[in-house]
Image 1 (cartoon, rainbow, N blue to C red):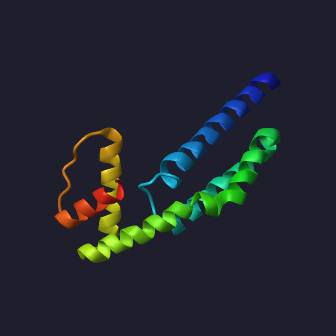
Image 2: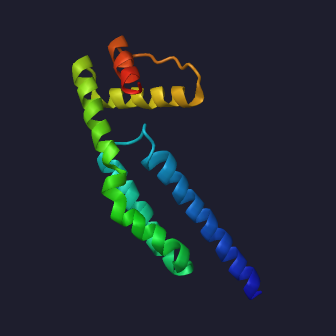
Image 3: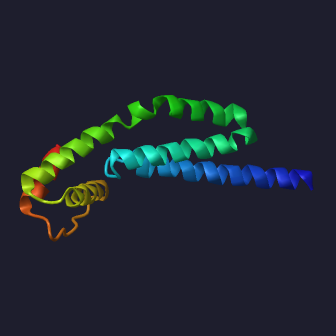
Length: 135
């Protein structure tokens, strides 16, 4: 019975860590994602969740958690640059910053999946400005 409980705990820990890693890779560190402040909050959440589970497997979780903690600002530096560029594009094209960010996400998805997606309600200047940022 103890072996079964240990196995269940290990499987749950693996699922939890897999989910956290997925969020980190596909939301927080993704080029097209939330703004810097939101990314920082989400990053801190991931670190807190790892800390919460650290006692379950300290040799594996602690080094990852401490590395993430120490490198947060360096890992997220690109998001501040991206926020600034998107704000400039929005200003230059006279559209709300949220629309520029949405178009950035669509451009990233299009380039990632190689599919053409119809984007309505965006001036052509925003389309071109976002495309240039990917060159």
